[in-house]
Image (cartoon, rainbow, N blue to C red; front, side, top):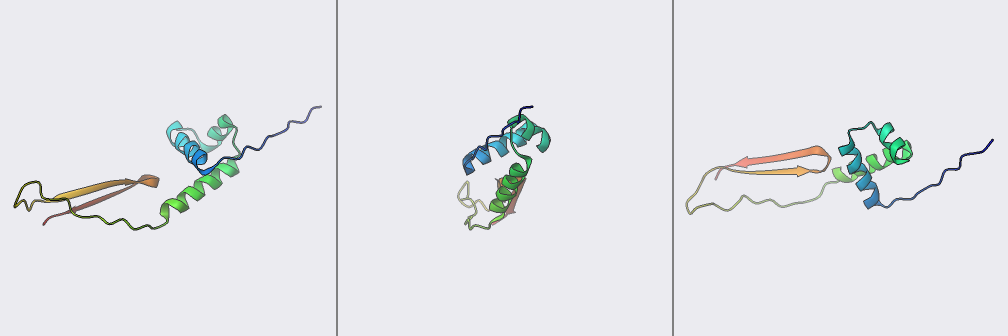
Length: 95
């Protein structure tokens, strides 16, 4: 009877992020994706959690209304941002 040995592979944050992106595109369940990639499901879930925490860490980004497209243009403006974690931010305003 032979024992199966498992080799632990350490991945840096860029490699983890790339795997998480591939998972999102794969449309597989986490369990199926991990089996296919030879990953531990618990490690994979830990990476997902870390990414979610990092994505929700507040940061400051100053936004300014776009410059008028023509002199005297007081028309409405809109800014749309696609943020990590599937968050979409839409800002609309007028002058």
